[in-house]
Length: 382
Image (cartoon, rainbow, N blue to C red; front, side, top):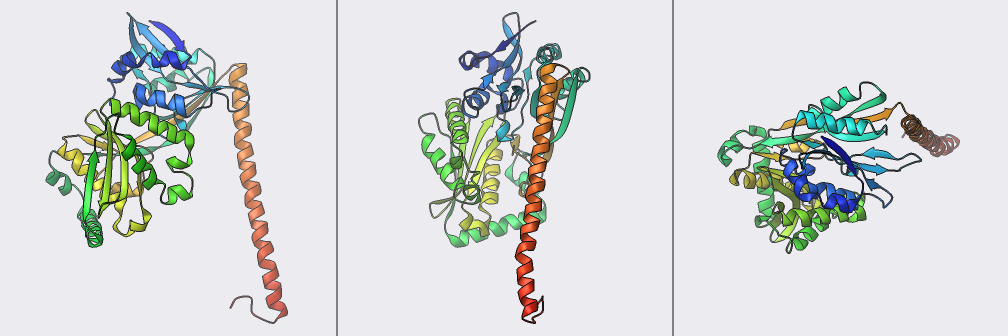
């Protein structure tokens, strides 16, 4: 088997067909070329370079590790594309032999790397831990979890799998919504020429509430917006893109962007108008989206992101992830280890100073008030 490194975006673009043929061995659309390409193009500064390790045999792509070379401080490091999106990541391969050849190629570069949110029980994670057992400092952290809803063959069977208390909540939310106007659910299957308007509707509704105020909405982050618009266009070309909207009297009160792939619906982004929060529009939209998925004959609904309490309205399965950092016993690797250690210490020091400053300020505000009260002969608490 022959190993190489693809280090230009244009060269990676030319791999689309063979990449997706290999990615078809895995259910996740996040391992396909459309997703990786959009991450590389939109989420990184120009000085970051693709560093994609590939394994070929017999003229066929056998394994690939999509990584980026990123210089956040002095020493560049390798990381999985799209770390900022907090979505699961991984490698693609067609056999254990190809996977081990791929991991050897990554390890032999003697460069430090950060692989975020790998499946805890995934084959590549176990193999990677074994490969890194010697010759480097390995730091493993919990990568949180995401939830999946297995779907039944019929909507009646699926609803019966929901607890009676949750079903009661869902009926109550629906009645509240219907008391406010005519409730309608819309599923949109756009192509590359028609995705722009539903995309605009989703961005607007997502930015209307706390996400807009906290600047975590897509519209508040130009690079994230560029990613989602680029990926949406590619997913629409592939016929995978889906938008879902909940309306009351024609007004959109909740929206979702997802992709339909490998008989599953993958939830990418959702937002709702908080002025309608009394009827839980996000929950109602999700319930209707699940009905759509059941009626399409899909086998599961993937929430992605990090597991949230509200997602447990429905019976879920849970996937757990780990994030791995590796620092080889080389000059570059240990320098990266030192600079990352300094960065962690600096963050803790800043947090400690900020906490101390806040305590001082609280006391400074409290003491004059207490002094005035004592001078006037008033009780300190009244």
